[in-house]
Image (cartoon, rainbow, N blue to C red; front, side, top):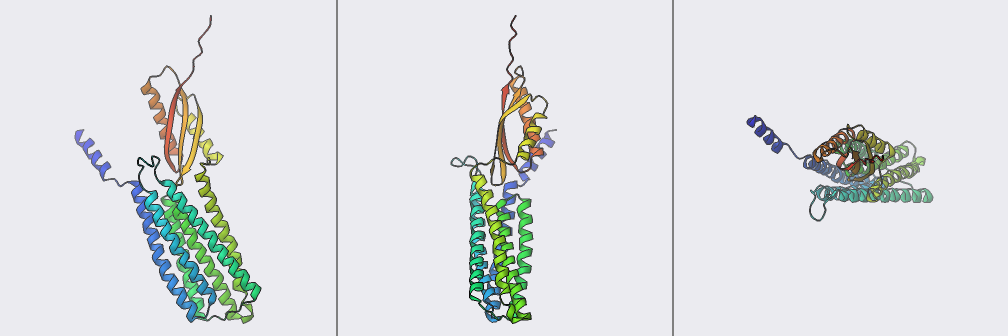
Length: 314
């Protein structure tokens, strides 16, 4: 029996910390993205210059912003993944939330840049006469950035990181801007009078990117203001808590989100004649139920209140 206990303790020591594992996965996918972004910036600049495509050169400038967001993501992961300390007793997850907000703002800024540039080109009837080299450059960019989006968003969902998911959408915004370039170059090669097609496509893409950026920013602001989760999550928490044997009632449920994970506390009412140990056991059963039923749960605190027994008057 003693050997089994010792073996169990050894396995616990050898088991990797899930927070450390998630941080490593987040850093790895972001570094891969940064390397791809650096290569694509160089590729699009060269293809844009040699292929006589101002739109592709502008797209390369847009890709430079991806390197900026990659740096923000890496910084957010490094600081946000730190364990709680005396100065930050609830951890540093809100740093990730702040980084997500910055990525959202970067997406909005990118969209405004693309939209204003496209609107000016439409107004001025700016003409470009790109070659097939620009077409190849845009096609390669779309393929790599879309693959990078799927790789990054899958990793973000697996490690439950809103910051990584936000960065994935920044990769997709780059792919969409390259789609606008591809349409414009293709149209111009088919018929030179269709040169304006790229500008209209870029204008349409800019609206979509703004929508995504605002959604990311809204989610970040909800965390900063400790907004409660949707009613279906709250109902699930209430149902789970009240289903535990020994729980007579519950009240004062509070739930907030930090770093994409739920932090909650609640009061349960139990038989006032129970011992402290028995009440504690019921509280632990509630915690276990919530851990199994509620996804993205970070921590839960359960307070035990005794049921008030009215004295009989005779």
